[in-house]
Image (cartoon, rainbow, N blue to C red; front, side, top):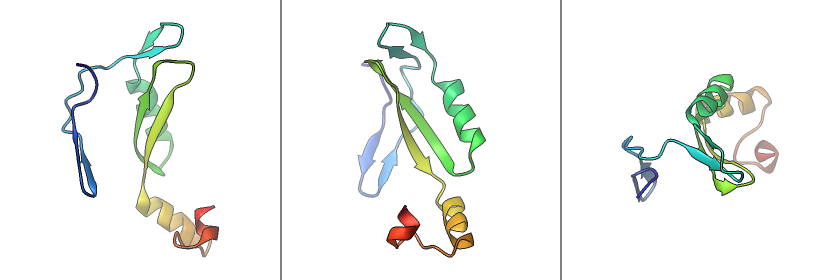
Amino acid sequence: MGGIIGRIVPSLTEIPGNIRKSLLIGHDGEKYSPVGIEETIAAQSSYIDQIMLYNNQSPYTTALLVPNRDTLGEALARQNLSPATVEGQD
């Protein structure tokens, strides 16, 4: 069994760090490590707390992003917007 071992409970996803599979496989069979890509993307944006890439022989790679709520909230406040409004969500 490969992949990340974790569990989902109400309001929380817990991933204790046991990653069994550290390579992604592109549609052409090429294997690559997502770690450097994930670290670079997260380091380049203060709006991203965490990122996880996924690909299992697909022609595209999917990214799951965890936003930094504080940084996003501050950016919205500077523009006099609220995340509770349609304008703040656009």
